[in-house]
Image 1: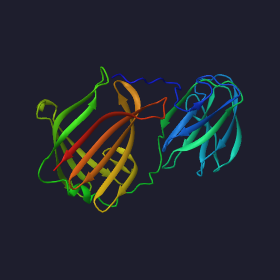
Image 2: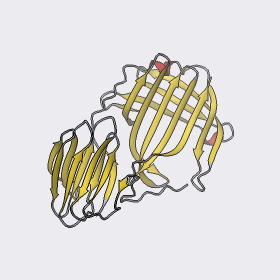
Image 3: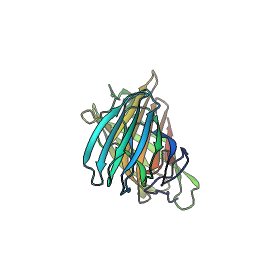
Image 4: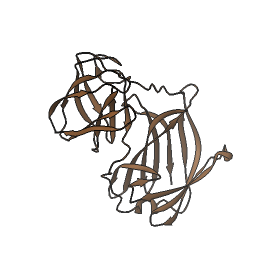
Length: 267
């Protein structure tokens, strides 16, 4: 299914207006590690009132259309401010925390052009102390399936698949995906934990949760889906008896995630 990816806003929020707003308000939800661009195509100056409804500091910047920062400060938890944005500039609201936040935006003037994007640079709060759960995956192959959403009509398709893991060193492994009915599509990828950049499999780590019998890793990266620029989210769940690897995508003009595919393996 071809995912819709409008450059500008179609938000599942309590918006009283869409792309053009005047003297109305929105309770804007900004997902973790993302930022919201406001007025990206606005050529006139505009003003907004911002009320932080969350218990974390929200980053605020003004930038030129070329991305050059012209001002910046933090909006305190539960704080309020009025922001004036010059012509041919935009406002950027940033959420560096590991949870979603809410900012009430009151539009005092018309504003054109709004969208979400993943933060370019941030310090991940998640640390991988070890990858011992992956050591448990090595040895005999796993059997299961791949379920994906068909691009053409949106139907869900499930095909058989096998999975195997080989440890290369303390922080790297190979993941082999085998499709018995479509062997030409089988693949092997090297999966590495990069401690310096806090990346797993080349993607920024959002969270890492361990229990006595499982390890769940969530990551994010910019990418494409069906030719459209999107944010990509991956969830890895490793246990001794089951492995789940799920991929979701988020259109740049949305805070909602859509399912793309999921591997489920057992042993």
